[in-house]
Amino acid sequence: MAEAIFKNLTAANMRIGTIDSAGVGIDFWLKPTDQRTVFTLYYHQIDVPKRQPRKVDASDFLKFDYMLAMDRLTVSELEKRRDSLRGATGLAEIRLFGGFAGDPEADVRDPFFQGFDAFESCYQDLVAFSNAFLNTVMGTRSEDETGSRF
Image (tube, rainbow, N blue to C red; front, side, top):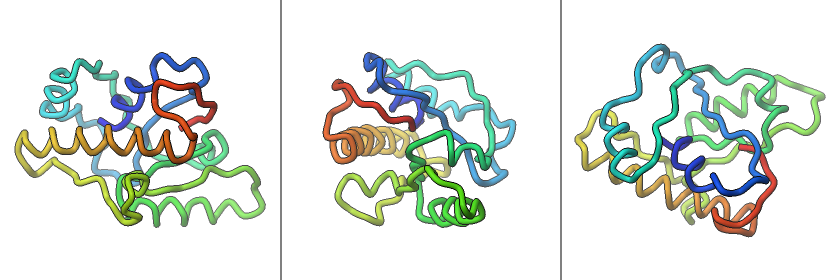
C-alpha cells in the first residue's frame, strides 16, 4: 500500500526516481495483494500496481538514497544488512517511515489481522507519512519537484 500511495502522490513529479518496495522476511512471498488493500486503494482512486514481491538485496543499498522501513524491527534488520557492506560508500539512509510525522518511534500499524477500518487508518497514516517525508527530508510537498530515489 505504501508504494502505491507514494507513487500516486509523486506521479506528476518528473524528478522522482525509482520507487520500489521489498521485504526482509519470507512471509510475503507469492501472496497476492490483500483484497482489503486493493479495495482501500481503489476507494481512493489509486492504481494497484502489479505485485512482484521481492527481498531486499545488497544492491538496494547502493541503488536508493532512502530505505523507509515500516517498523523498528525492519529498521534493525536493514541496518544489519547495510553494516555487512563494510567499506561501501553512498549507501542508502535507513529511516523509520512513521518517524517523519513527529514520533521517532512510530511504526506503521499492520492492518492484516484487523478489519477494513484498519486498512483505511493505515492508508491515512501512509499518506501523512509520505507527505511528512517529502516535506521534512526534501523541503517540499508531494506536488513539488524533488530529486531522490526511494
